[in-house]
Length: 197
Image (cartoon, rainbow, N blue to C red):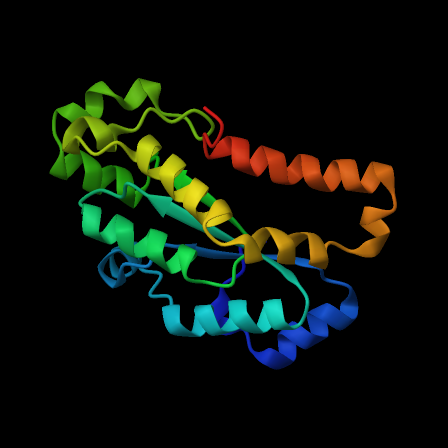
């Protein structure tokens, strides 16, 4: 969970598969090189795409974590992240709104770039129910973008859903308790992206 894909290789993926791994999550966050630099993560995005493909090829379900609404992020940069996800071999995705919590560098950047609007919305921000400061300071509706992106991700490419159910471990499919837990986790992920609202 939350793996850094550009530090992995095919040998490690195959070892994980042999050890019983069947669902990996890669923490991509953003496909914008500028935002990657701002976060000091500097992920090699091409290598991550390759590792996602290798994981799928090895028969492992692959999830990606993405964030939108970073301080100073443009609509074009948000679209870069969405396109990365849409054009990948990911089976599921987690698309979340950025919450710059006090004491973090993101908080300092947001406070500096967006005073005083940022402070007015601080009390509303939580991880589970973010009230995006980003929409109020830019006018860009992240919820709307997130819903549209999730629908496109899951329904514009039937391969995702077919491949997802094909790769679910057979022991999970034939065990009602495990299947309920597994599908419950997927449903919670979709729900967290306000997919159904």
